[in-house]
Amino acid sequence: MKNVVLLLFGVGIGFVAAHQFNKTAQGSEFFETVGEKAREFNSGFIEGYRDRDDELAAQQPTPGQYADR
Image 1 (spheres, one colour):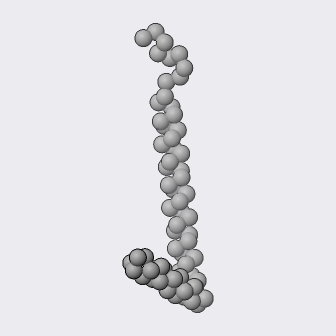
Image 2 (cartoon, rainbow, N blue to C red):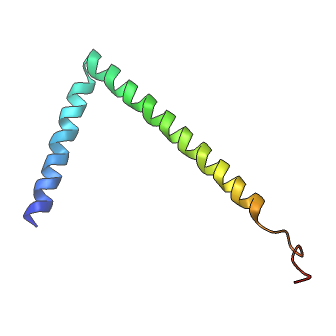
Image 3 (cartoon, rainbow, N blue to C red):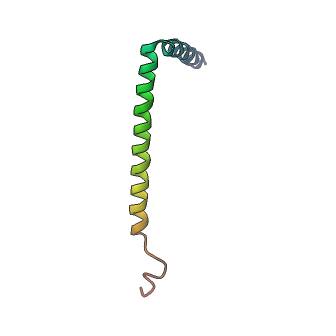
């Protein structure tokens, strides 16, 4: 239980520190850059997932394709 309390305390301190840092010009620029890179990563991940999903869907047999077996 002590570890959970310490974890929550650390998260709270980190949140407050990040909020204070974001108020500065450097902090705002830093978080803007981090957010942009996260959006790029997310877009790439989604695009790759959809491409792979399309590849797998193309490999699925159509109904009746193997009916003679």
